[in-house]
Amino acid sequence: MSVRIAPSILSADFAHLGRDIAAAEAGGADLIHVDVMDGHFVPNLTIGPPVIRAIKRVATVPLDVHLMVDNPDRYLKDYVAAGASMLSVHVEVLPHLHRTIAAIKDLGAKAGVVLNPATPVAALEEVAADLDFVLVMSVNPGFGGQTFIPRSLDKLRAVRALLTRTGSTAFVEVDGGVDLGNVREVVEAGATVIVAGNAVFGTSDAAAAVRALRATAGEAPR
Image (tube, rainbow, N blue to C red):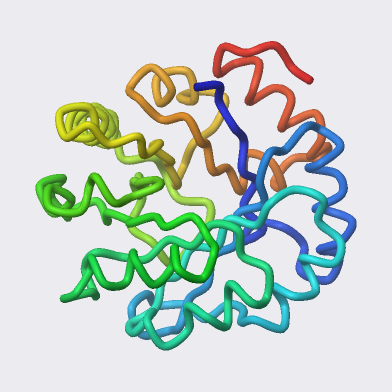
């Protein structure tokens, strides 16, 4: 599967989201990654469905929405209705994970499960066959601009191995501290969707940054 780049608007200029999204898309972004935080599950508060709807009006690529919230089941319908094509939820807050995955799919979105750095890969064992994707956090969630946790490479390999062993067709996404210095290693470890915030929007040219990430990951820029 080819590598896809998903710029994270957590590092964009919220006063000029339309401009920043257009710049990322001009560089060939495949997805726009949107982090939803509730101030409880993670120590930060970001955006809700109204902003997703606004982004959906300007984005030309699918929206990859990551719910970092205590009770995601309450909000699945709202975020898919607002424009999420992909919806990921944290295993750490869901006692009935299989039911939540099924609910996301019933709403017409791709269903993903997120693993925090300290969460074992074995937590996916019973749901791997039901997933569309797995999102591996390579930083502790809540803030942009953090440093990649090196052991995340081993975790990516372990996730990829588990999916292969269980016959799952899910793809692997990685989020946190990915940049030009480590993106090739991340892809070699099994990730095919690269979430990048500061590495894209923390530069003076988001379009060029997306192209550089793709080229460094091992693919020709678009």
